[in-house]
Length: 341
Image (cartoon, rainbow, N blue to C red; front, side, top):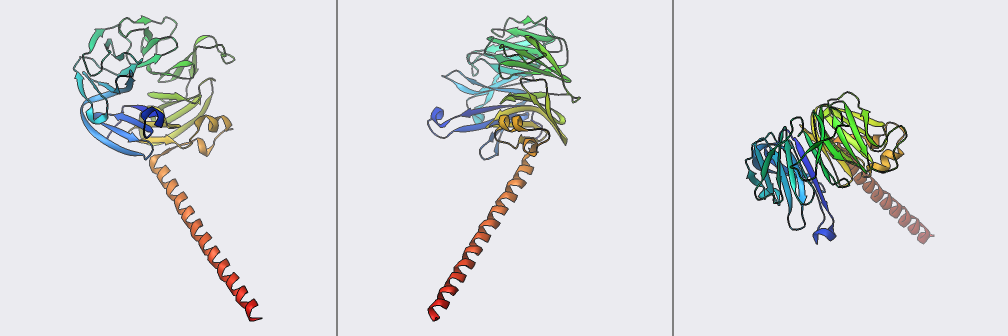
């Protein structure tokens, strides 16, 4: 497939679909996209001309599908095989987000907005210094847009207001955590708390957490934890507390984005990895230091582990069968002996 620059996840229960549950991730790169069926860990690849750098889900109740953005191109479709170009609006588009009613795409000094992803898009010039990362905050009902100038917010994707309390920096992504917004830069994370249970040592509003050196590019938040990904590294830290839980080195790979789906964190770039545990929150909460269950592993590692487990199971079943046969033979022999007496 090549390098994956952006990914988004979709999960729907059987009750929501009226049939089989859906757990899938759409990954995007240069001139192609790929859909991962999380249940079977199988990929389906589709050609799509463009240098895609952002992807999100958009669901209004009347229309549900995927929206992608890249250099001078925007695409949308209800299914990966139906996605095609919808706009040639000029812009170095790097991020996209939905509030359930409209979709906003941003890039340096530019924004584009629509209420119908498969219809017309309207592009606007915006203040310079933003456009690297975009997220919707359903509590504050604002789009959050980060870049080297800091943070700007907007209720509609058209009018943007700089947040003067937010520092300048190499801000590359922003995401929604548990009751807070989390921005990640090349060397630090900035968190905004929205409720009264603010951790000790932090104040209401934005709080800075220094991260280990890593040149962090993207991230994801779920189950009370946040991960950030970079060149050969994945960092995991607690959402509500300024505490790094674990840094995992995975050499020879570059990770550009991450999502949470089916109870696992997934990281994508020049390779793909997923967390091994199925309940990240419980596993990490119980961890007291390095714990093998909390590590990230390549899908090949996971496959090998599953193969070893299957082989061990088959060996155990074979042994049980042999033991049963031995016991049966001994019982018959004993019965025959008693018959002769």
